[in-house]
Length: 571
Image (cartoon, rainbow, N blue to C red; front, side, top):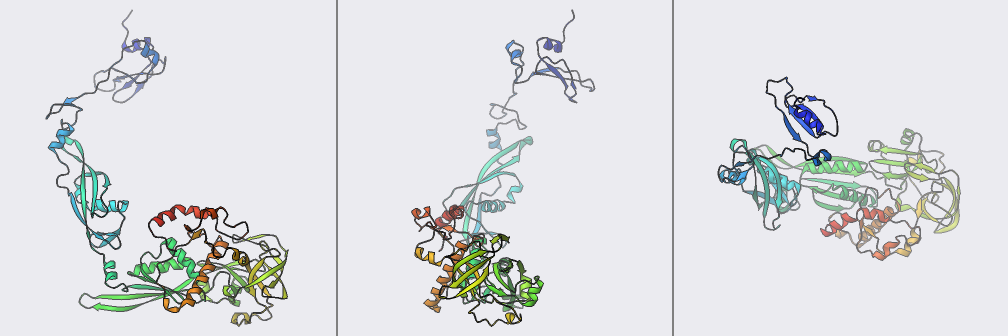
């Protein structure tokens, strides 16, 4: 009997093998007895290297083979002695342990450990040389990026691995950043080391803050926002949009005027950006002008003051409009009496008789600008005696309407009954009250209305359901929500009557938010801490009085608490 080879002996012991060439990794098939647990590294014969055969037992091999006391090749890890201290260590290109290598080489040598940075205490900005100011909060990602960039020349010598803040007292004027860097040292060995850089803050006001401190009224650009109407409901809504989008963050002063608001900016580009924002949320037209303040002929520099005049369309939501004949024809003979249902950068118009809806964009409106026939301040309250549904429910622009014949009478005068057609058949029922326009007793001198010869006007047009009688029961009770307001200068010389008018219009705006979910869709409503938790169980107190659902308040509850903690909530 001939002598068995090593591979044959392994197969006899019940060990499956596979042969793999060390150079080309060409695998040879062998007899399969159980799961493979031995790999033979050998020469396939296609190379000029001598034949080599090794046996490596794989971890997690066949338990039966392990239990049969088979031969196991132990795996050992080679170690060498440090050339300095002589301790045993894993081999590396420098033949030195980490302790000796650090004592011999300091990769942080020549790197700055102390840096001075300029900080504006007014706007909390940091100077990025030569003239750029960056706004960043303490221990924020932006501030860490700014600190690392200040060491850009030093970090070209090493490789940055990690950077993090070390806590310091906020009033100490010190920032500490721990950096971890790597560098190739003796014979290709890579050494990793950490060190701390201390940043010393020096207070230095930026140019805009210096200008404001010298003269608070010194501005470069102003935006004069105006709307030629008798109420301020549009400005209350715009104020909430500006707060939500933080559009007036760069305004150095905001002043309330008679028919609008003035915004003052320290930079012309900020004013241009604000005017663009206004054009995206409302139908506006603007023009600008500039005035020379100073001129230096030596360096040919000019200083100007820029003024932007922005006018908002006088058409407001719930206004009754008589369309000019040319506009009505371009909209497919719409109207001519229509109701404005929504105002964004487009104006949504609804015919209450046919339920046709059309949109006018900003360019179309200002090409044929017109005014409303009757406004929201001329609404009259009606009692509804009877409702007869004429058509099924229609969905127009996301809102539901039902055409119905109604029998109504003015609350102030029951001597005359009106039989009208309305689009509010889905929400009105006998016994309700509704707000509408009294065309029977109105004396309108509208030029556009006179152009329609033989036009028969309805006696009344209902606009919305009235909840005034039910609101009397809750008068004086706080709401479970509140809104923010801009830090605005108010002209107090106009007297108490104007203040009472503003409060009344603001209360009407809050009621509109409660009644119209679509109107508050783009606004942020915050929890009112003055509202008692026991009253939150039933917001509507058991009746159908419209209110803001608690789900909408809970969405902003966490944000409101954070802002209350920072004393940034203003009623």
